[in-house]
Length: 160
Image (cartoon, rainbow, N blue to C red):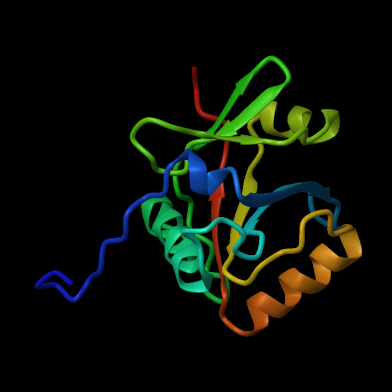
């Protein structure tokens, strides 16, 4: 802990990020323009050096590095963190050397991002089961937001 009362957690490396679960979707509201979403969580601990606390600390390292805020607060713009190269999309999650590749977000999602539109980035601290379908992801997201275990920020495509 620093003199200011702030804590600083390490930004996890690629080994941790490989265990993250990532969901992307494009939400079409009735009245507003569509919003692209990225939800990042982590599977339940499975590596020998992982436990619930180490996973949470890794996710909080990402939260702090990207300056995300609790989901119940106003969603801040956290800088343009998305990088596209052809069909690949990566997120600059704050590590000095590595980025996180987003798994196949789809053509509509990519077109939205490439047009310069915003993306809502969420990190959920509670485990997301791998392979969860849209209904399970939505229920999970509603629950973690309601209990204060989700952090959000708005991002967009980084200029090349």
